[in-house]
Amino acid sequence: MAKKPATHKVHRDLDGFDIKVNQFGELRSNRSVDDINAFLNNQMKDKKLKDEEE
Image (tube, rainbow, N blue to C red; front, top):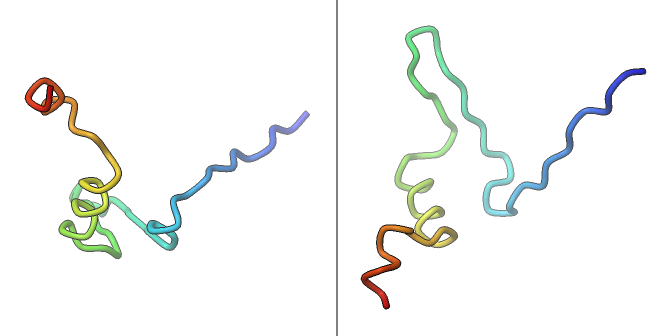
């Protein structure tokens, strides 16, 4: 019996995000690193800073 392809939910801010690795091992994306970092800063909590906040 064939497996169903996995379906993943994508955050609406990342809709259309595409990333690939070229033949030299470099990551190529359709978004800038600054845009990705800004998204991560807004959506993720830094575990290292957790102790400093308390």
